[in-house]
Length: 394
Ligand code: PLP
Image (cartoon, rainbow, N blue to C red; front, side, top):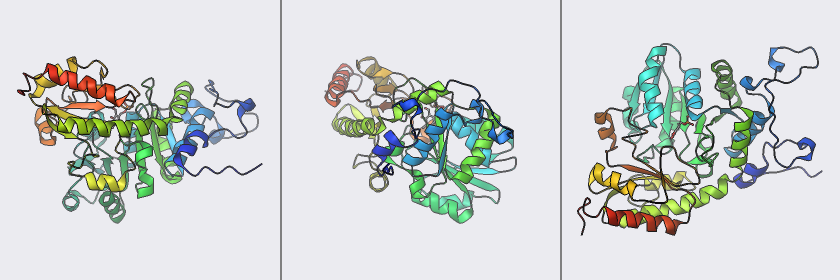
């Protein structure tokens, strides 16, 4: 039989990691809903197949597919994005260690770093992702890792990722990046020298807003260390959720194409609208890191944030007056979603900390879905009409 070669990410998403030969000829990966698998001969602990040990067929197929699409040696799926993040941090940081972490982060990660890490004897310092010169002053002899997000949530800042990799290699730090917002279609961190790429699989990877999942991708050596910790902490993904994630991933390339194109058009529409104070989207020429994002990414994703004129009241009224997007947290699904981070994902941060990062009470985060772009733009335009007086525009 002809050897199978999967060169491009679109092909790898469909074919990498699929059982070969197919199980009973099944074209789609069946669900192996079994907690453990029979051991037939004299075997040791490492031969045990058990869902929590992350080595049963649905998880393994995903490990291969995820590693293939981000050009890595290995991967792991986890029970949520936070399971991927917390397990990875607790694998490489121990009592007495120090972490350098980007100052603008997903709220859950921010809370874990600021409220939980100290209970494990781990300290941290925030760094400005755009000021590599300032990192050395924050590094300590016990610094072990550096952690950033591909595009920050919700400001869509793009850190100097090249400098992160160089700094980590120079000082022997493990470099970790949350690649959720970009998705592997737009950015593949391992190809750029990062040690570990993390995902909330709940978002773009699955894409259908119906599961919670996570992933860690990297070298076999580092992934085996994370697996050891994950086996003990227990944040493993169950076979049924694996099946849904697997199915969702098959259309990732198609979905991201629409997310990328539609978000760029919507960001341009918002930028030109006289009821909008500012728009954050790396695909806009006005974005402070637009050139860097253009060099690093194959697309700018479906995530953007903007602030209508008129602050919190205008933002709340705008959200009441849209009819297509759903007002809720999370992101990366086929449905467009709106949320006000100050009230939801970043409510755990103090108002002062939010202010420093530009997360105002009137900031709206948009996860652009795959609906028709023109329908979304028309809906937004109508919502702006409804807040004309609050936004003080004629
Ligand atoms: N990383 C980012 C960028 C996120 O936005 C989220 C959730 O919103 C997470 C990680 C956490 O993922 P999960 O909710 O799957 O635990």
